[in-house]
Image (cartoon, rainbow, N blue to C red):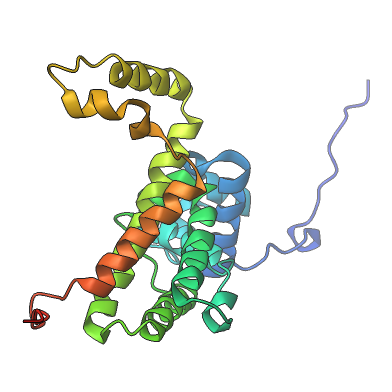
Length: 237
């Protein structure tokens, strides 16, 4: 009986693998995250995706935290910055920019959690920060106060995306919400008079209305609250 042998393929006849680049690694990581979730974005999984060894990736990306920051940097290119130069109230335009940033993170809550401790620093992030500063300047916010406000506003948006996005994906999220609502509703007035008085109001306004209100509270505070080294505003006699 004749033996069956597989044809030998010369290495020279195989198509050459694309050269590894940092941009290619980040693009592959974003693709895996969007298809399989952030938990699946590991060096081993990326090496499989790129047909290479995990050790080769560390030449371009030092660790997972740096990779997450680079992934966010790529996604930040999708933030709508057109309101920065548009007409209209500067507060409304600022909220539109921040809401665009939040909507991108809302779709990737795991990445939002990572960004709370690891920040991007590329051109897309700088463009976002520049846009926020331009709008604060248009509103007459003092430069030093505006500098601190960038981090405050982005942290609020990032933490909201991390919390809400993760909660919505949790299997028992609805049960937890129901349990909290019941606890607030049934709180005895003699022990918790303020909770009993407010009741369902504590959980009301879920969605964009409450989020926009939160941004407006922060923006109002930024315009009215001096930094420690600023002189306190004088009261009219």
